[in-house]
Image 1 (cartoon, helix red, strand yellow):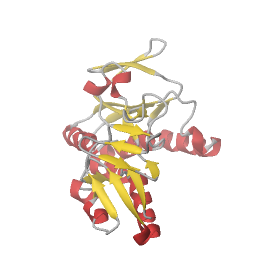
Image 2 (cartoon, rainbow, N blue to C red; image 1 turned 180 degrees about the horizontal axis):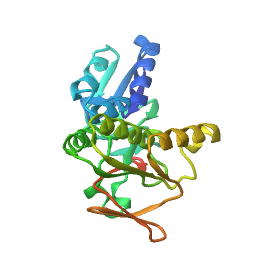
Image 3 (cartoon, one colour; image 1 turned 180 degrees about the vertical axis):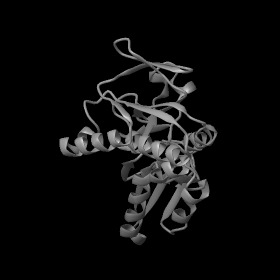
Length: 252
């Protein structure tokens, strides 16, 4: 009797698991991947895309290469319901029975948690967001840039610091005068990495002339202004934000 292992979502985690499990199963089972996207971007390359160092096609993984394996099946639809008791996954046009289930759906960006965030901010946490940020960087002639962590938790704790440093270097090389400020509700950078790494990141950010604002919680975004808890505010010409994350609607 063969086993059917179902993998929901095929980002980096789902991609890795699917490849490993299909090799281990061989002819003794099938891996069914449920993923609506035909191609997925490599998240670590999205900053390079935003700064013009990569093109979209160079950072996209075509899932057809994985589905070409004899024991791998790709269902290119969104998960609508997970029936744990019945061991059934429901999509728009399929009901898929499973023996083992891997949930690797990732997290959605929670733009709607803060008024004005979706309308006025830029992000590099998605392919579309990175491309829009690339255009904004190209057209930016100088001024005030505010980059921040909107809420906790958020994807890739180092990303806002990476964005700040890349932005400073890019603008400096282009001889564009900028003032960069970096805010976060956290007490120090990347808390999960510990106090030693946090101090090193703080020193690095300060050495580039970036003003660091810890324990600063965003509550509202306007066209040229951000407001924080307690009443303080900052003016900006460009806003880059680390959006908070929430579980996808399939598992809420």
